[in-house]
Amino acid sequence: MADASAYADNIKKYTKGYNQAAAEKIVGHLGIALRNKDSAIVACTDAGELDRVREKWCRGKLALAQKQQELDAAIQAVCDQMKAEGGQKSRVTFYYLLAEHFGRLDALAG
Image (cartoon, rainbow, N blue to C red; front, side, top):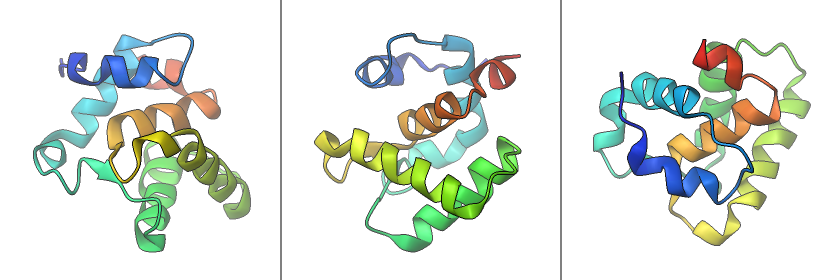
């Protein structure tokens, strides 16, 4: 099981509940990418990056069928929610908040 403890405090800043099993699944999914500082953060100013978040995470891993504009709006909402992080938005927290937004935490944890 992947260790999500390093991300727990950051996630808890943005959510009332904390689903450790879901966070561990996200850390496990991201795996080696988390070792690289650049790939461990989400750059909300990079359109290509946000497209990858939508296609690989939202559509791929979360299997969401919403229209592109709905997914993009949710991604932008998380960017806004995490604005205080500046350019250092944790990918684990970002993905967690998207999964939570679409009610997919339990699916990840299961």
